[in-house]
Length: 397
Image (cartoon, rainbow, N blue to C red):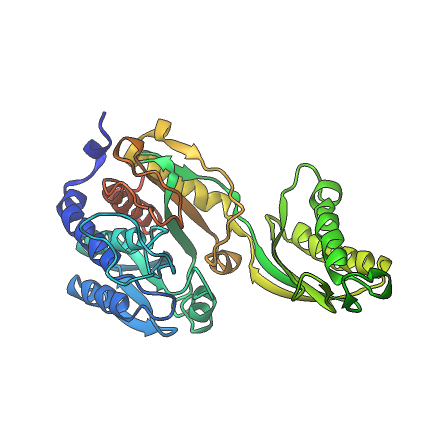
């Protein structure tokens, strides 16, 4: 049975506008907390179909749809920002903002959420409770979820369940990924400044070489995952940058390492941090140098609630069939939807969007990233089914 045969007439009716909206957004991408045009478009479309709207946390938009009867409050989140990437695709909807591109599918997230908003507004009479739409800026950094939380998006009325969707080019169009438990990792950053004693490159015995110490620290840090993390747990320790020295025959006074740490569970995250401090300081000291460490907490792990994942899975099965709903793979990428899911039970699900036959399978953040737009109506339909299952609509079983 073709996937599209499971789409309702109302979703088919908005499909053309959903794709047009996605292309409009793709032509006009905006960086985090600068999404002024994007926010304006979202606000106009929500108001046109009867939603209440409010600006929140700068360029964020809160949409509210109240059902006919009291009931739970559900939040749907779509991130709206683009990336600092120069697009290489030769398509009619190519980015017109040089050096900025929707290279991660956020244009699709917004378009699908707006399509679902239009359908759900027409079915308001069948909804019990309140539906909130969270159009979030700056997911790619520095992070817009926490400012929206601090501005009260989870309150008045209090959100009982929260969901988010991501276009996913690791899955073919027509597939949907859902799982309970961790789905994205935490993402912390660190800087290690190693201080030695500089001198002439031809007289290393008179110095404490911080570059050599930095090299030893870099290698030693790799033992954290291989020897300190439980083999059935997951973590990543990456040294992304090493800076040191000014000339070929000068031993510098200092060298700097920058990197990222990822983990799926908070205890592992805390342990890796402790080990990084211990190893960096100990290895540097063994070579006569010192290590100063600056740690920057990033997004925590994104963890799906079991019951909400089951609800999302059931909604997805209605749309694409059980054989096309898979146990999504865990990724060590990070997401600030994690802050919402720390506070509210919910589910982050993946919408298959790749089509290798059309050449639409480049990875996220690639300058050639694009996706099969036939995935968008599927996303709209799943959003509608999730909302109706939770808020007591006609599709609830």
